[in-house]
Amino acid sequence: MNLQQIKLRFGITGNSPRLNYALETAVRVAPTDITVYIQGESGVGKESFSKIIHQLSNRKHGPFIAINCGAIPEGTINSELFGHEKGAFTGAIDNRKGYFETVNGGTIFLDEIGELPLETQSRLLRLLENGEFIKVGSSKVQTTDVRIITATNKDLFAEAQSGKFREDLYYRLSSLPIKVPPLRERPQDVNLLFRKFAFDLAEKYHSPEIQLDHDAEDLLLKYSWPGNIRQLKNLVEQLVILERDNVITASVLRQYLPEQTTNLPALRTNSQSSAGSDFSERDIFYKILFDMKNEMSDLKKIVLELLQKGTSKEDILEGNEAVIQRVLAGSDVDLASPEITISRPDAESPESDHDHHHFVIEPEDSVNLEENLSLEDKEEELIRKALLKNNGKRKKAAQDLGISERTLYRKIKQYELD
Ligand SMILES: Nc1ncnc2c1ncn2[C@@H]1O[C@H](COP(=O)(O)OP(=O)(O)OP(=O)(O)O)[C@@H](O)[C@H]1O
Ligand SMILES: [Mg+2]
Image (cartoon, rainbow, N blue to C red; front, top):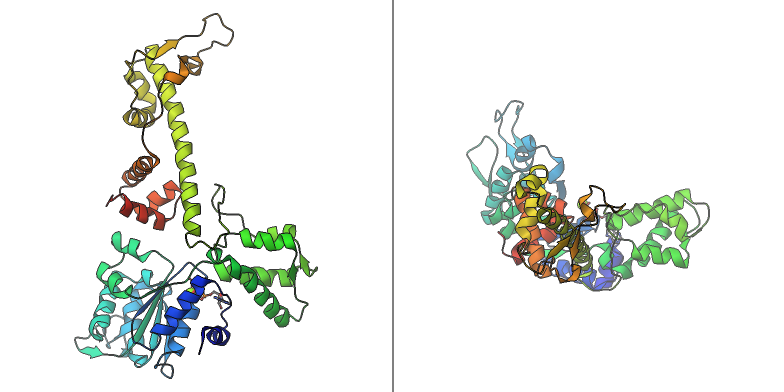
């Protein structure tokens, strides 16, 4: 079966190189018993991939079960997956087989693997290493023959780094990763998918097929699709049901597209570059940096003026300790430098009130208030600060920085901050 036939059989629309590459990988690993790790944002089609792998494997006549690890309560997950002995816990009135026993000879798809409790993770690791497991409340070692496919929309490496996921299990699972690309990184597929859904849903609702006008098509392409294919499908469904006019304009379409969650400009590239999303994250990051740098310069000016005016450092520190100390710490301005002269505005001048901002530094341009740090140093410093502020909690630090956890982890590695 070639790729085109596989797409047809499994209802996969799209022809972007990265999607094709992910599909080719899936096809190639399917007949083996290798554990596969599917990574991708929410709604990119991870579940479809798990089905393809099972169907194209030698286990296709065996059972397939998809388990959402995040949806099973922690208290019962071990028993659900591995089974339990009668009397193992209150309410265990019978022996019960777990999925790993009932799916013997088949495939288990563990979705949202990052949600697995740590104890379950150790049980899973054992199973992956030698096919062995023990029912809850039992001491008898059993074996099973199950092919495991996992998926996550989290950065599991990051989870492993922060201790939320067993590192050994992470490496065991991720040896064969399939990365399903987000929709914004396969712009050439957006229109294809739109037309496919428009066609399917027109049939489903017995209504004429909707079409996009030129501007609407453009808007669709530029949108960032945080919910990926699922979001696009839902959008088309809403349009089919709610819009009377079959031709959808950009202004109509806009009403259905939620605002970007960030209040910084969305800098999406339409190129097919595989680094598409990385670029926008980096751009946003630099924007924050430049903004901060400017604010810092302003702050430094103010502090400098206050200091030169004769206000004691202690006085200034009193009210604004945190802010000012941070500024002073990062400042390479020599306060005693003879280059800096401060002129007080005329006391009689109508503008002169008690506002410190009215003090002027002269000659303004000769004062080097900029830090001579490269942008990278600045970035590193910023990350360090965010981590420090949040006691090393990376999730919170990433939020503070306005970047994704994934980017933060990459940066931490890059600057060797761990
Ligand atoms: N290439 C594709 N062509 C057509 N439909 C697709 C494609 N990929 C995914 N879909 C559809 O998009 C929807 C979302 O896919 P799926 O449930 O597999 O996403 P997911 O990656 O598992 O998301 P989550 O992480 O939120 O569970 C499903 O309805 C699926 O049928
Ligand atoms: Mg899913």
